[in-house]
Amino acid sequence: MLYIASSGASQDLLATAIRSNNLANAQTTGFKAQMEQARAMPAYGEGLPTRVFAMTESPSNDYEGGAMIQTERDLDIAVQGSGWFAVSDAQGQEAYTRAGSLHLDQNGLLNDADGNAVLGATGPIQLPIPLSSISIANDGTVSVRPLGAPANALEEVGQIKLVKPANRDLERGLDGLFRRKDGVPEDADISVQVRSGMVENSNVNPISEMVGLIELQRHYEMQVKLMKKAEELDSRGNMLLRIL
Image 1 (cartoon, one colour):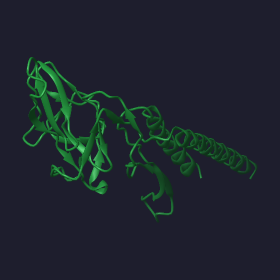
Image 2 (tube, one colour):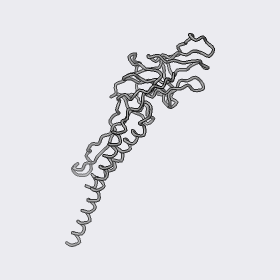
Image 3 (cartoon, rainbow, N blue to C red):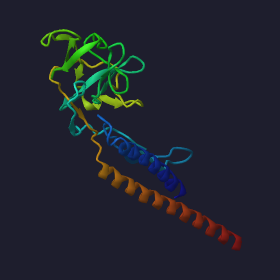
């Protein structure tokens, strides 16, 4: 009884951390909520595996789209429907995100909000600077007008790599980026479209997360009561042994 209650309480704390992280990112652009669940696991050891304990896990993520926010900023993009755009992570590996608040660094490299280079067909997208204007088409094509060039003198400098891997093939990294589980880069998908001048908000439902946190708190309190009851039963058992 004590073992089951204590393991359940510890897993409630892990589930609370997942829910709290979701709530903290309710306004984070492109964030996908993590899902949590608990299941019973047998405890193996000497004798028969009659003991069980609870294990909390995050088996998947909520891949539903978030609300679209109009910004009218040229470097803001939002993926329409299913799909992702590719970036290069800190280790130089391909990863995927929907956080479309892009910016240029001092060398003209197109980066996402966390400083990861946005990938095109042949690698990171480099823009000639200084620029007068920049536009991103629905298919991810990036066009620029160099400083001092005529108003209609637009040059295509690259195309953002847009992909649409199956959700079951993706996993979230500790950096918040998504990658294929097998580590193989996904091929570009021409069916994925983006809209410039807007970003996708987080798909976290704050009310649902708050209700989940309250339920976990009550469940944790119940586990603590069970642990106290186990201690009480143990004390009474010792008293009976003294009498005998």
